[in-house]
Every structure is written in structure tokens, then in C-alpha cells.
Image (cartoon, rainbow, N blue to C red; front, side, top):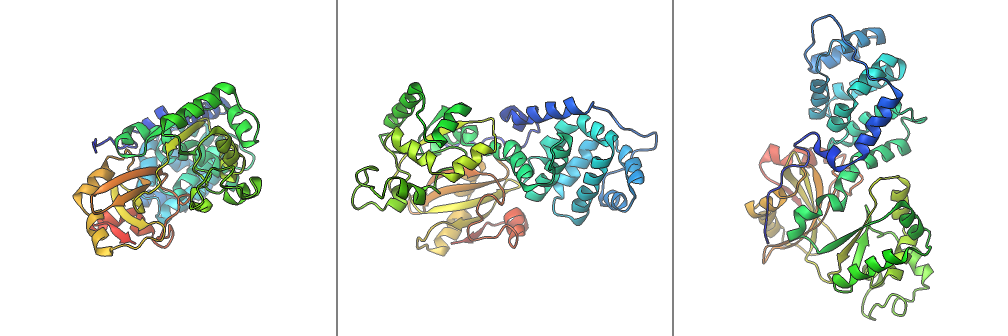
Length: 402
């Protein structure tokens, strides 16, 4: 296995914008609605600190506007908020700042001038609440009719943050130690036809068939997410004819093997019966990619790894395998495994991997957003937040739950 340490994807502020065109799309919308304007004061500049936030939070809106205009470098404010996402003062500031933005046109115009820095600093935070606070204000700036609704915030999170973890973004960087895959570009109409169970373009069907052949004749697939929710609906669709229609062997459990496909017709049936794929398509992402991955019958036990601040903080077992806890404690805290994790080009991510401790085999299955939308396994995003965010920095070790 060849390992190459990749630069942290978030280490350069403008890398997310380079990869994800949705940032530029939103910036253009904001600046077309509100003429960018710099709001400044003749008073001396103020330092960004908890004291500043506490002062701001305790003022009425005209005084808040006066204090806000004294900030010479808004990037310092965004960075302070990004570095302290869970503090009470930062959370209160966002509540107050949302109200200030909703009332004053000058604040909207000032944010229009600084919206790129605002989005690329706070819209990619590892903390869900901080990102959603950012997106509430972005929703105001794009004149969304429901700027605080769950649907609006989910859509913006998908557009800005979750898209950064789409498979095609990172595949080439982990290609040497993941499952062989093929990536096929789809148009919006292609996806709509697949979801609706309609016929697709003949050249697209040929591309899919060729990719399945190149990958050995058996694959599973995903878009942003996999169709792992499709089983019950698919059972009804094919009337449980798993051997005749799905070509499974008599000893293969359909609940385990239903995502194993051999042809384009099976792929279309999974598409049609997956609410997850339909939901993601409705999220209106600009990136439409079909990912086909070589099917492997017997992977080693799977684990979910939680990386934040560039450190492996926690590892949770997946499934019902029996584990030697001491053996895995030693392996997941080894420099060998930490070196593999450092090859992942994200300073915060949830990484699924298959691990054989006996021969030190590690297969990266996929990289997910560091977000409550990714299952916490044997942890809780709420109760175990400090473990998932900071355990390695606090204890110089990785927390393991198997």
C-alpha cells in the first residue's frame, strides 16, 4: 500500500471554493441582490474577544450597529467564532447578529462585500450549529422566504459543506488504499429519469455496462449516498424473486447482498426504490456523479473513525463482529494507523474503514462529513461531543468503543 500525506483540504481557505462551484454561485446571488458596501466608523478599532462578544450581546441594536462598524478586520471575527463554536458567547452573538442583519440594509450590504470570507470560514466549520448559524444569515442575504427553516438550512449545508465530501472530490487522493471505482458524470435529466424509473440514454447505459465489466462484473453504487434504504421497497418491486431477477445464489442473504448488481437494469431498480437518492436529488446539488465500486464479498470488520482538528479522536466498531478490545486499542493508537489517517485530505471527517489487525490491512471505504448527519456509531454527537471534538488533544490517545 502506497501512502502519500495529503494537505489538509481546509488548510487553504479558498480550496473549498475551487472544488465546489456552489460557493461562487451563492456569492454571485448575494452580491447581485445587495450592492457590496463597506460599513466603517471613525472610532478606533476594537479587538475581537469574548469581552467584545459579551459587550455586543448586551447592547440595543443601534449600539450593536455602532460597535459592529468599528471592526476593521471581519476575518478576525469569523475566525474567533470558528475557533470557539460551542461557547455561550458565540452562540448568543449569532442570535443577536441574525436579528441585526434582518433589520438593517447596511449590515446586509456590508456582509455582501465580505460574503466570500464569511462563507469560506464559517460555512465549512466542523460544528453543525455554527454552520447552521452561518447559513441562517446566508439565507437572509439570498432573500429566502424561510431563512430559519430546517429545509432551507439543510439545502445550504448540502450545497456548501456536504458536497466537499462527495466521492469524486477525494477518490484520486486515496485511490491506492480504497476499493477500485469508476465515476460517471450525470446530467440532471439523467438522474431524474433514473429516479423515476424511466429509460435512460443508450450511451449512458453503455458507459455503465462497460464500467461494471471493467470492475469484474459485480459492483455496488452510490451518488452522494448509497441506496441502502431500498431493500423493503425493492422486495415488493421484484416480488422477492432474488434468485431469478437479482441473480443471487441460494445461500446469499438478500438483506446483505441486495446492493450487489450485475447490470444496468438492477441499478435502475435500486435508484427507483431509494428515498435517500430521491431526497439528495431534491437538495439540488450542482454535482451529479454516479460512483460504481467493485463488489467485495468478504471485507474485514468495519469501523467508523472520527477525525477533528486533524487528530483521530475516536473509533467505533460497526456491525456485530466479536473484537479483542486490547488488540484494537493498540492498533488504533499505533503510529501506523495514525499515519494512514493523516493521508486523508480533511482535518475533520468521519471515515469508514475495514481493518484486519492480524495483517495490518486497512481499506478506506468512504469519507463522510463530520456532522450529525453521519451516524456517531457507539458514540453520541451530543453526549460525547468533547470526545469526538477533542479527545486526542486532551489525552494524547484515541478513544475506542468496540
